[in-house]
Image: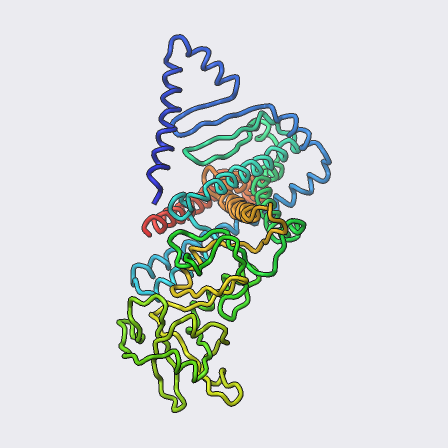
Length: 505
């Protein structure tokens, strides 16, 4: 849920701003000077909305829009083609997302078993578009990344509109930014009469320029993410493991023999870890595959084990140790007569410096008798040996996902002690937000929906293609209206169901 402190700050802040605005506007002494100040500085204040517009950047926009006219012409032609394709593709994307959301809702309502939950989560992860609500499915500690990426994506979007408009000889009045509740954004002010006088194709270049620039920004973000190891190579190296950057206070990995900030993890069980992707894949494999075993000699087994009485847990697994023991684990193995036995062993002595195995055949070594002992744990629980040299291996007992969610890692290892281990994580996280939000802004604005860029793209496209085919403008406008209505309903359904799914969980 959204933290109450955040709600109080937002509501309180906007209340203070709006009340101050009302008081100054109603004051006999300050009204005139205050309104003059607002007008001179291009500031407008209304409930939960404040905007600032300026002509300071007009010269810069005109410089960009009039430089290399031929190159800009081709650039915005590419944007026009992309915008038209994106507009029609958005129907397919929104339709697919809506069907996935409905399927997820049906899966959640039909059963709350672990199998249905995993299937619904997989559907959820496959969705291209997801509704994001700060404090619910967006961590509060990442709000800075989110809002910065939203603002930059909006500014780049409007820069595209502004440069394209100047290129098409449309008067540019100014540029501004706004804050709606807690969401920042940007806008450009164009002379409407000029915009209406140019041809539909010229209008298309202007209207498609915003989503085109967002798409290019997302591509540049992907390129930067791929090249980040090369960019940071003089200061950070990669490919030797993952560096621990944070361990949550409630993490099962905390303890004297647990993980600490600055540790370098190289293996999870027998799975080598060279980067973050390896870490995630290894944990996924460990979670979905049967528990791995460890080879132990018959003499060591006899020395460490002691008489036990095994009993079944509620989930059907076997337990043979004292429930309050923090060091002993129940292991199962097959003896030379292929009979399954259970024994309680001190976990660290049993698995330390041993090879992993699945059956006794994996442990046959010379003439000595060896057994493959497998931890007998509750469902979804795993014993994981985490190698982080030069420290002693950490033995983790629990669900692999808990290790995934409570331990933060990075693939970048500093070459020098004075370098921050958090800097690459900050850069990487911000670039990922920029890619996601800039791409989402391009997709959503391409939807033929009332009040979005898609509405003007559709109108200009119909004017450019159907005017010569359909002589009656009323028929053409009716076609456009129904397309807009369909896109608006589809987008509204996605947002409504998406919000319901996020808040209902």
